[in-house]
Every structure is written in structure tokens, then in C-alpha cells.
Length: 230
Image (tube, rainbow, N blue to C red; front, side):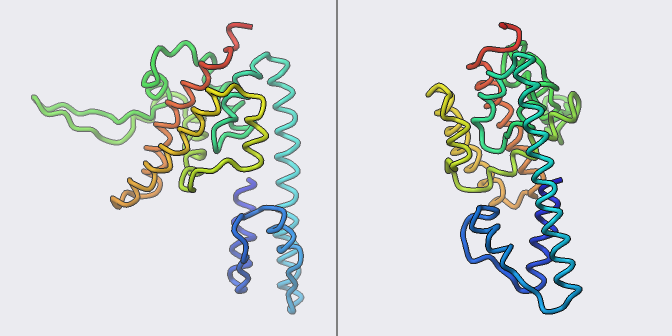
């Protein structure tokens, strides 16, 4: 919901030739720049105010939801796994808790590929004699968890970096978890752009990246105490 509100505001500004000159979208500087925009036509100014209010409102709602879910996670004793998963780019509190809630004890999967299969992210196979053809993903298993990972995969189109927000999330985590999260950024960003350079559609690229992201989720979750150990 926050992404949609931001996209609508950005599209409105672009239609009126307003392009942010800075580098980081939705940073404090960007938000300050947006707040300083003015339009001559009353209708345009009113529409702008509505789009701006929608962004602020959805941001506040997400913050409230994140806080409630975080408190819920602590009460359910899965905070260590959630905190570990939040080390990954694209997985905030809401999506990390969503994955834990949907998947359950990730330790029950002996391999990363088993988790990928559970999420329906492995390619389907069609055999004809000695020939095996791979098709689209199976889409079996947990659709909500698969959607969370696919949405998170979109973040890996950006160059690897540790933002201030991500650094704060990683601060209390063990070094191996932080290193694995960085490895994920480097590998998944490279894969995203390699597949795009081959002409693969963006949505298919996101699915491929989500499949590998599931492998990093599996590995990092196993570095933290699972709910079953509490």
C-alpha cells in the first residue's frame, strides 16, 4: 500500500515536470523537497496535497503495523529469527514476520531447495524419454510467502549497499549473519542484472532472484535460534 501511494505521487510530479535532483528517493531530503513543491492551478495543488497525504497516511499505518507485529513476534518468541531475516535487504519487520508466520520452523527443511519447493519457486519439469525440459515455476505451496519474497527480490536491482536503516537493523546481529546478508546483496544484484541483460522480463527476473533469496533466508534463519528451540 505504501509503494502504490508513493508511485502515484511520483507519477503526478513527473507529469508536471517535477524531478527530484537528489540521489536517494524517499529520504528526508527528498521528502523535504516534495513538501516545498507548489502549483499555480488550484486543482493541481489540491491533487498534490491529496497524494502527499496518502503517502504520509500509509507510512504511519505501516509504522503502526510494524510496531504491533514486532511486539507480537517478541511475545511468540520468534524475535531472534525475525531479527536475523531483517538483515537481508528488502525484508523489513512486516515481511520478515510474515515469512516466519507462513513458513513456521525453517529448520524443518533439510536443504534450501526443499524450502524453495515448499514455496513453489522451483521450475516445473517435463520429461520426454531422455529429455527433461524445465518450465515455469510450480506455484505450489505457500502463495503468500512466495509473494513476499518476490516483492523483496525487486530491491536487488539496486547496487549493493548498507543503508543507515539496514545498518541499524544489523547492528546487534552476529558477524556471520551480516556477512551472509552482504553476500546475498552482491550475488542477487549480479543475477538480477545478468538476467535482465539477456532480455528476460522483469517479473520473471524477480521470480528467479526470489528463488535464490529463499536460499539465503533458509541459511540465515538457521543461524539464529528457531522458534522450536525456545
